[in-house]
Length: 394
Image (tube, rainbow, N blue to C red; front, side):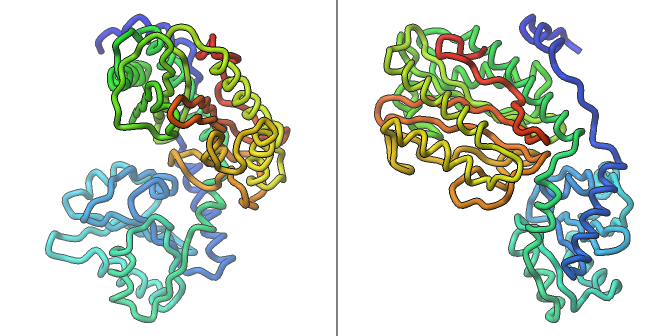
Protein backbone atom coordinates (compact mmCIF):
# COMPACT_ATOMS: atom_id res chain seq x y z
CA UNK A 1 0.00 0.00 0.00
CA UNK A 2 1.29 3.47 -0.85
CA UNK A 3 2.43 5.63 2.03
CA UNK A 4 -0.22 7.91 3.47
CA UNK A 5 0.26 11.70 3.34
CA UNK A 6 1.89 13.03 6.49
CA UNK A 7 -1.37 14.57 7.72
CA UNK A 8 -3.16 11.24 7.43
CA UNK A 9 -0.33 9.26 9.07
CA UNK A 10 -0.42 11.58 12.07
CA UNK A 11 -4.21 11.38 12.36
CA UNK A 12 -4.66 7.63 12.07
CA UNK A 13 -2.60 7.03 15.21
CA UNK A 14 -5.30 8.80 17.27
CA UNK A 15 -8.29 6.89 15.87
CA UNK A 16 -10.33 4.73 18.23
CA UNK A 17 -10.40 0.96 17.73
CA UNK A 18 -13.55 -0.82 16.57
CA UNK A 19 -14.35 -4.36 15.47
CA UNK A 20 -16.85 -5.64 12.92
CA UNK A 21 -20.37 -6.57 13.96
CA UNK A 22 -20.18 -10.25 14.90
CA UNK A 23 -22.33 -13.08 13.60
CA UNK A 24 -23.46 -13.64 17.18
CA UNK A 25 -24.73 -10.06 17.41
CA UNK A 26 -26.65 -10.36 14.13
CA UNK A 27 -28.22 -13.62 15.27
CA UNK A 28 -29.26 -11.89 18.48
CA UNK A 29 -30.91 -9.13 16.43
CA UNK A 30 -32.88 -11.73 14.51
CA UNK A 31 -34.07 -13.40 17.71
CA UNK A 32 -35.24 -10.09 19.14
CA UNK A 33 -36.97 -9.17 15.88
CA UNK A 34 -38.73 -12.52 15.72
CA UNK A 35 -39.94 -12.06 19.28
CA UNK A 36 -41.34 -8.66 18.24
CA UNK A 37 -43.07 -10.22 15.23
CA UNK A 38 -44.68 -12.88 17.39
CA UNK A 39 -45.74 -10.31 19.96
CA UNK A 40 -47.44 -8.30 17.22
CA UNK A 41 -49.01 -11.39 15.58
CA UNK A 42 -47.03 -10.83 12.37
CA UNK A 43 -46.09 -13.80 10.20
CA UNK A 44 -42.90 -12.34 8.74
CA UNK A 45 -41.01 -9.20 7.73
CA UNK A 46 -40.09 -8.39 4.12
CA UNK A 47 -36.82 -6.44 3.85
CA UNK A 48 -35.40 -5.13 0.59
CA UNK A 49 -31.71 -4.34 0.01
CA UNK A 50 -30.67 -1.41 2.20
CA UNK A 51 -29.60 -0.57 5.72
CA UNK A 52 -32.08 -2.91 7.44
CA UNK A 53 -30.93 -5.84 5.28
CA UNK A 54 -27.35 -5.10 6.37
CA UNK A 55 -28.48 -4.81 9.99
CA UNK A 56 -30.20 -8.19 10.14
CA UNK A 57 -28.22 -10.29 7.62
CA UNK A 58 -24.89 -8.62 6.84
CA UNK A 59 -25.82 -8.37 3.13
CA UNK A 60 -24.68 -4.93 1.93
CA UNK A 61 -26.34 -4.63 -1.47
CA UNK A 62 -27.70 -1.88 -3.70
CA UNK A 63 -31.20 -1.40 -5.03
CA UNK A 64 -31.95 -1.79 -8.72
CA UNK A 65 -34.76 -3.16 -10.86
CA UNK A 66 -33.46 -6.64 -9.94
CA UNK A 67 -34.88 -7.50 -6.52
CA UNK A 68 -32.65 -8.76 -3.74
CA UNK A 69 -34.63 -9.12 -0.52
CA UNK A 70 -35.09 -11.19 2.62
CA UNK A 71 -38.14 -12.59 4.35
CA UNK A 72 -37.64 -12.94 8.10
CA UNK A 73 -40.32 -15.23 9.60
CA UNK A 74 -41.60 -15.04 13.15
CA UNK A 75 -39.87 -18.41 13.69
CA UNK A 76 -37.07 -20.23 11.92
CA UNK A 77 -34.36 -19.40 9.36
CA UNK A 78 -34.75 -16.54 6.91
CA UNK A 79 -35.26 -16.57 3.15
CA UNK A 80 -33.05 -14.54 0.80
CA UNK A 81 -33.97 -14.10 -2.86
CA UNK A 82 -31.51 -12.73 -5.41
CA UNK A 83 -30.69 -13.01 -9.12
CA UNK A 84 -28.90 -16.23 -10.09
CA UNK A 85 -25.72 -14.44 -11.15
CA UNK A 86 -25.52 -12.53 -7.83
CA UNK A 87 -25.79 -15.64 -5.63
CA UNK A 88 -22.04 -16.09 -4.94
CA UNK A 89 -21.71 -12.48 -3.75
CA UNK A 90 -24.85 -12.70 -1.61
CA UNK A 91 -23.76 -15.96 0.02
CA UNK A 92 -20.36 -14.42 0.72
CA UNK A 93 -21.97 -11.60 2.71
CA UNK A 94 -24.80 -13.53 4.39
CA UNK A 95 -23.86 -13.64 8.08
CA UNK A 96 -26.80 -15.56 9.56
CA UNK A 97 -28.45 -18.91 8.81
CA UNK A 98 -30.71 -18.64 5.79
CA UNK A 99 -32.14 -20.24 2.66
CA UNK A 100 -30.87 -18.49 -0.50
CA UNK A 101 -33.11 -18.93 -3.55
CA UNK A 102 -32.33 -17.52 -6.97
CA UNK A 103 -34.28 -16.35 -9.97
CA UNK A 104 -33.26 -16.12 -13.60
CA UNK A 105 -33.69 -13.00 -15.74
CA UNK A 106 -36.95 -14.32 -17.24
CA UNK A 107 -38.38 -15.39 -13.87
CA UNK A 108 -40.10 -13.59 -10.97
CA UNK A 109 -38.46 -13.05 -7.58
CA UNK A 110 -41.94 -12.46 -6.21
CA UNK A 111 -42.97 -16.00 -7.10
CA UNK A 112 -40.10 -17.28 -4.94
CA UNK A 113 -41.29 -15.15 -2.01
CA UNK A 114 -44.94 -16.12 -2.47
CA UNK A 115 -44.17 -19.84 -2.73
CA UNK A 116 -42.00 -19.67 0.38
CA UNK A 117 -44.73 -17.90 2.36
CA UNK A 118 -47.27 -20.50 1.26
CA UNK A 119 -44.94 -23.34 2.23
CA UNK A 120 -44.55 -21.75 5.67
CA UNK A 121 -48.32 -21.33 6.03
CA UNK A 122 -48.01 -17.54 5.90
CA UNK A 123 -49.70 -16.90 2.56
CA UNK A 124 -52.82 -15.55 4.23
CA UNK A 125 -51.24 -14.09 7.32
CA UNK A 126 -49.98 -10.61 8.15
CA UNK A 127 -46.73 -9.62 6.39
CA UNK A 128 -44.82 -6.65 7.80
CA UNK A 129 -43.01 -4.48 5.24
CA UNK A 130 -39.77 -2.70 6.14
CA UNK A 131 -40.72 0.93 5.63
CA UNK A 132 -38.25 1.77 2.82
CA UNK A 133 -39.16 -1.23 0.65
CA UNK A 134 -40.29 -0.06 -2.79
CA UNK A 135 -43.90 -0.37 -3.88
CA UNK A 136 -43.29 -2.63 -6.88
CA UNK A 137 -41.70 -5.25 -4.59
CA UNK A 138 -44.69 -5.30 -2.23
CA UNK A 139 -47.20 -5.24 -5.09
CA UNK A 140 -45.38 -8.07 -6.85
CA UNK A 141 -45.94 -10.32 -3.83
CA UNK A 142 -49.51 -9.18 -3.17
CA UNK A 143 -50.61 -9.93 -6.73
CA UNK A 144 -49.65 -13.57 -6.19
CA UNK A 145 -51.16 -13.82 -2.69
CA UNK A 146 -54.50 -11.97 -2.71
CA UNK A 147 -55.32 -13.16 0.82
CA UNK A 148 -52.06 -11.75 2.23
CA UNK A 149 -52.40 -8.66 4.42
CA UNK A 150 -49.53 -6.19 4.63
CA UNK A 151 -48.69 -3.67 7.35
CA UNK A 152 -45.80 -1.35 8.08
CA UNK A 153 -42.81 -3.01 9.70
CA UNK A 154 -41.42 0.29 10.96
CA UNK A 155 -42.30 -0.32 14.61
CA UNK A 156 -40.55 -3.69 15.12
CA UNK A 157 -37.54 -2.70 13.00
CA UNK A 158 -37.04 0.70 14.59
CA UNK A 159 -37.45 -0.72 18.08
CA UNK A 160 -34.20 -2.58 17.48
CA UNK A 161 -32.26 -0.24 15.19
CA UNK A 162 -32.77 2.84 17.36
CA UNK A 163 -30.85 1.29 20.27
CA UNK A 164 -27.19 0.89 19.32
CA UNK A 165 -25.02 -1.81 20.86
CA UNK A 166 -21.51 -1.08 22.21
CA UNK A 167 -20.09 -2.54 18.97
CA UNK A 168 -22.19 -0.16 16.86
CA UNK A 169 -21.22 2.84 18.97
CA UNK A 170 -17.54 1.88 18.66
CA UNK A 171 -17.82 1.84 14.85
CA UNK A 172 -19.55 5.22 14.92
CA UNK A 173 -16.84 6.57 17.23
CA UNK A 174 -14.15 5.52 14.76
CA UNK A 175 -16.06 7.15 11.88
CA UNK A 176 -16.30 10.37 13.88
CA UNK A 177 -12.60 10.27 14.73
CA UNK A 178 -11.80 9.88 11.04
CA UNK A 179 -14.02 12.80 10.14
CA UNK A 180 -12.42 15.16 12.66
CA UNK A 181 -8.93 14.19 11.46
CA UNK A 182 -10.01 14.85 7.87
CA UNK A 183 -11.49 18.24 8.81
CA UNK A 184 -8.28 19.39 10.47
CA UNK A 185 -6.16 18.25 7.53
CA UNK A 186 -8.51 19.93 5.05
CA UNK A 187 -8.63 23.24 6.89
CA UNK A 188 -4.84 23.45 6.80
CA UNK A 189 -4.96 23.34 2.98
CA UNK A 190 -7.68 25.97 2.37
CA UNK A 191 -6.45 28.96 0.36
CA UNK A 192 -7.83 32.23 -1.00
CA UNK A 193 -9.62 31.90 -4.32
CA UNK A 194 -10.88 28.38 -3.70
CA UNK A 195 -14.50 27.47 -4.28
CA UNK A 196 -16.60 25.12 -2.22
CA UNK A 197 -15.94 22.44 -4.84
CA UNK A 198 -12.18 22.84 -4.34
CA UNK A 199 -12.60 22.39 -0.59
CA UNK A 200 -14.85 19.37 -1.13
CA UNK A 201 -12.20 17.68 -3.28
CA UNK A 202 -9.61 18.09 -0.50
CA UNK A 203 -12.03 16.80 2.13
CA UNK A 204 -12.89 13.69 0.15
CA UNK A 205 -9.20 12.87 -0.29
CA UNK A 206 -8.58 13.31 3.44
CA UNK A 207 -11.56 11.16 4.43
CA UNK A 208 -10.26 8.34 2.24
CA UNK A 209 -6.66 8.80 3.41
CA UNK A 210 -7.79 8.40 7.02
CA UNK A 211 -9.77 5.23 6.29
CA UNK A 212 -13.28 6.64 5.92
CA UNK A 213 -15.71 5.05 3.48
CA UNK A 214 -18.48 6.57 1.36
CA UNK A 215 -17.33 10.10 2.07
CA UNK A 216 -19.35 13.14 1.05
CA UNK A 217 -18.67 16.84 1.52
CA UNK A 218 -20.69 20.02 1.05
CA UNK A 219 -18.80 23.30 1.54
CA UNK A 220 -20.82 26.51 1.17
CA UNK A 221 -19.11 29.87 0.86
CA UNK A 222 -20.49 33.28 1.84
CA UNK A 223 -24.29 33.79 1.60
CA UNK A 224 -24.67 30.12 0.62
CA UNK A 225 -23.89 29.26 4.23
CA UNK A 226 -27.28 30.77 5.16
CA UNK A 227 -29.01 27.96 3.24
CA UNK A 228 -28.89 24.78 5.36
CA UNK A 229 -28.16 22.56 2.35
CA UNK A 230 -26.40 25.14 0.23
CA UNK A 231 -26.63 27.18 -2.93
CA UNK A 232 -25.79 26.50 -6.59
CA UNK A 233 -23.65 29.66 -6.60
CA UNK A 234 -19.94 28.79 -6.50
CA UNK A 235 -18.27 31.77 -4.84
CA UNK A 236 -14.53 32.04 -4.27
CA UNK A 237 -12.92 32.50 -0.88
CA UNK A 238 -11.92 36.02 0.02
CA UNK A 239 -10.97 37.56 3.35
CA UNK A 240 -13.95 37.39 5.69
CA UNK A 241 -15.78 34.63 3.80
CA UNK A 242 -17.89 32.34 5.96
CA UNK A 243 -17.47 28.66 5.05
CA UNK A 244 -20.02 26.09 6.26
CA UNK A 245 -19.04 22.46 5.72
CA UNK A 246 -21.35 19.46 6.20
CA UNK A 247 -19.50 16.16 5.74
CA UNK A 248 -20.25 12.47 6.13
CA UNK A 249 -18.31 9.22 6.12
CA UNK A 250 -18.87 5.65 7.24
CA UNK A 251 -16.97 2.80 8.87
CA UNK A 252 -18.50 -0.57 7.97
CA UNK A 253 -21.73 1.22 7.14
CA UNK A 254 -21.99 3.27 10.35
CA UNK A 255 -22.09 7.02 9.86
CA UNK A 256 -20.39 10.12 11.14
CA UNK A 257 -22.12 13.40 10.24
CA UNK A 258 -20.25 16.52 11.30
CA UNK A 259 -20.64 20.19 10.32
CA UNK A 260 -18.12 22.95 10.92
CA UNK A 261 -18.22 26.67 10.19
CA UNK A 262 -15.14 28.86 9.90
CA UNK A 263 -14.26 32.30 8.62
CA UNK A 264 -11.44 32.69 6.13
CA UNK A 265 -9.48 35.57 7.65
CA UNK A 266 -10.93 37.75 10.38
CA UNK A 267 -14.43 37.13 11.71
CA UNK A 268 -16.67 40.09 12.48
CA UNK A 269 -18.12 40.84 15.90
CA UNK A 270 -21.55 39.79 14.61
CA UNK A 271 -20.24 36.45 13.34
CA UNK A 272 -18.69 35.80 16.76
CA UNK A 273 -21.97 36.72 18.44
CA UNK A 274 -24.01 34.35 16.27
CA UNK A 275 -21.48 31.57 16.84
CA UNK A 276 -21.70 32.00 20.62
CA UNK A 277 -25.51 31.88 20.52
CA UNK A 278 -25.51 28.74 18.36
CA UNK A 279 -22.89 27.06 20.52
CA UNK A 280 -25.05 27.78 23.57
CA UNK A 281 -27.99 26.29 21.67
CA UNK A 282 -26.03 23.04 21.39
CA UNK A 283 -25.42 23.12 25.14
CA UNK A 284 -29.14 23.68 25.77
CA UNK A 285 -29.89 20.60 23.64
CA UNK A 286 -27.47 18.46 25.63
CA UNK A 287 -28.94 19.66 28.90
CA UNK A 288 -32.45 18.78 27.71
CA UNK A 289 -31.45 15.32 26.42
CA UNK A 290 -32.33 13.32 29.51
CA UNK A 291 -33.19 9.62 29.61
CA UNK A 292 -36.95 9.29 29.51
CA UNK A 293 -37.58 12.78 28.13
CA UNK A 294 -39.56 12.99 24.86
CA UNK A 295 -37.19 13.43 21.91
CA UNK A 296 -39.16 16.49 20.83
CA UNK A 297 -38.47 18.27 24.12
CA UNK A 298 -34.85 18.76 23.04
CA UNK A 299 -35.96 20.78 20.02
CA UNK A 300 -38.46 22.68 22.15
CA UNK A 301 -35.75 23.71 24.62
CA UNK A 302 -33.43 25.00 21.90
CA UNK A 303 -36.19 26.89 20.11
CA UNK A 304 -37.34 28.53 23.36
CA UNK A 305 -33.77 29.63 24.06
CA UNK A 306 -33.35 31.11 20.58
CA UNK A 307 -36.65 32.93 20.77
CA UNK A 308 -35.46 34.68 23.94
CA UNK A 309 -32.51 35.97 21.88
CA UNK A 310 -34.85 37.34 19.21
CA UNK A 311 -34.61 34.54 16.66
CA UNK A 312 -37.68 32.90 15.15
CA UNK A 313 -40.33 32.37 16.39
CA UNK A 314 -40.41 28.67 15.50
CA UNK A 315 -38.89 28.16 12.05
CA UNK A 316 -38.93 31.82 11.02
CA UNK A 317 -35.66 33.34 9.79
CA UNK A 318 -33.32 34.68 10.96
CA UNK A 319 -33.17 31.69 13.27
CA UNK A 320 -33.29 27.91 13.18
CA UNK A 321 -35.28 26.74 10.15
CA UNK A 322 -34.92 22.97 10.68
CA UNK A 323 -35.08 20.38 13.45
CA UNK A 324 -32.39 20.34 16.12
CA UNK A 325 -31.18 16.86 15.18
CA UNK A 326 -31.85 13.48 13.61
CA UNK A 327 -31.23 9.87 14.48
CA UNK A 328 -28.11 8.34 12.95
CA UNK A 329 -26.55 4.91 12.51
CA UNK A 330 -26.52 2.70 9.40
CA UNK A 331 -28.52 5.51 7.75
CA UNK A 332 -27.25 9.04 8.05
CA UNK A 333 -30.83 10.12 8.81
CA UNK A 334 -32.93 7.56 10.66
CA UNK A 335 -35.67 7.55 13.34
CA UNK A 336 -36.22 9.28 15.58
CA UNK A 337 -35.73 13.04 15.14
CA UNK A 338 -35.17 15.77 17.69
CA UNK A 339 -38.14 17.76 16.46
CA UNK A 340 -41.20 19.34 18.06
CA UNK A 341 -43.94 16.80 18.70
CA UNK A 342 -41.77 13.67 18.70
CA UNK A 343 -42.93 11.75 21.77
CA UNK A 344 -40.51 8.81 21.70
CA UNK A 345 -38.67 8.77 25.05
CA UNK A 346 -34.89 9.07 24.93
CA UNK A 347 -33.15 5.85 25.97
CA UNK A 348 -29.58 4.61 26.40
CA UNK A 349 -28.09 3.55 23.05
CA UNK A 350 -29.96 6.10 20.93
CA UNK A 351 -27.73 8.24 18.69
CA UNK A 352 -28.48 11.72 17.34
CA UNK A 353 -26.99 14.73 15.64
CA UNK A 354 -26.97 18.03 17.54
CA UNK A 355 -27.07 20.84 14.95
CA UNK A 356 -29.19 23.86 15.89
CA UNK A 357 -27.79 26.17 13.20
CA UNK A 358 -28.59 29.87 13.00
CA UNK A 359 -29.18 31.36 9.54
CA UNK A 360 -29.28 35.01 8.45
CA UNK A 361 -30.73 34.98 4.90
CA UNK A 362 -28.60 36.67 2.25
CA UNK A 363 -25.69 37.07 4.65
CA UNK A 364 -24.33 33.98 6.39
CA UNK A 365 -25.17 30.97 8.50
CA UNK A 366 -23.39 29.32 11.43
CA UNK A 367 -23.88 25.61 12.08
CA UNK A 368 -21.82 23.26 14.18
CA UNK A 369 -22.96 19.64 14.12
CA UNK A 370 -21.67 16.94 16.42
CA UNK A 371 -23.37 13.63 17.12
CA UNK A 372 -23.99 12.08 20.52
CA UNK A 373 -25.24 8.86 22.05
CA UNK A 374 -27.42 8.40 25.09
CA UNK A 375 -26.10 6.61 28.18
CA UNK A 376 -27.71 5.80 31.51
CA UNK A 377 -26.26 9.06 32.79
CA UNK A 378 -27.32 11.20 29.82
CA UNK A 379 -25.88 12.27 26.46
CA UNK A 380 -22.24 11.85 25.44
CA UNK A 381 -20.64 13.52 22.40
CA UNK A 382 -18.72 11.41 19.89
CA UNK A 383 -16.72 14.57 19.09
CA UNK A 384 -16.34 17.82 20.96
CA UNK A 385 -17.81 20.99 19.41
CA UNK A 386 -15.26 23.80 18.99
CA UNK A 387 -15.25 26.41 21.75
CA UNK A 388 -15.08 29.48 19.50
CA UNK A 389 -15.06 30.72 15.93
CA UNK A 390 -11.32 31.38 16.30
CA UNK A 391 -10.66 27.68 16.92
CA UNK A 392 -13.22 26.03 14.59
CA UNK A 393 -11.62 22.58 14.76
CA UNK A 394 -10.80 22.45 18.46
